[in-house]
Image 1 (cartoon, rainbow, N blue to C red):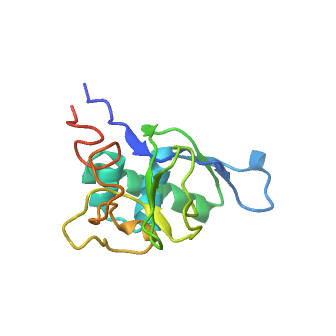
Image 2: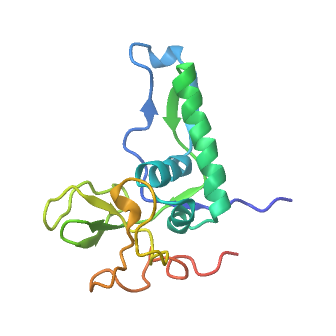
Length: 177
């Protein structure tokens, strides 16, 4: 009997859950389901610019699992775009946990409530904010790719240090059984 899948940690359930080609009624379209966990993997890697390793840390799964979830999500999005199908975001193996955020302008750190991802800093109002993905990767704090989410929260400054929820291995899950 196969092992049950590990739930993937996501920052929230999206407010908009249906995307469709313009000018075609939904009832006339085939719908493809994109799991919430697949959307989170796409967001972390393709939008935030995290590596697979960093995304795995954020989602609480292995790098290989992130790769499989990401590949499945990319395939479904491509099929919908090329085939003119609707995308319904629903389901998947996930749990919602609040996310730690960081402002790149003033270095403020805060936690979202889990149902939204911040687009502006509550301290200074800057829009250059990103997801805190963990304690660092040993490469000077910057990952590859685009987007403001590449930097860890633990940069040696006061706020945001410690091993609370969402702070990387041990702080969030302990051991994975």
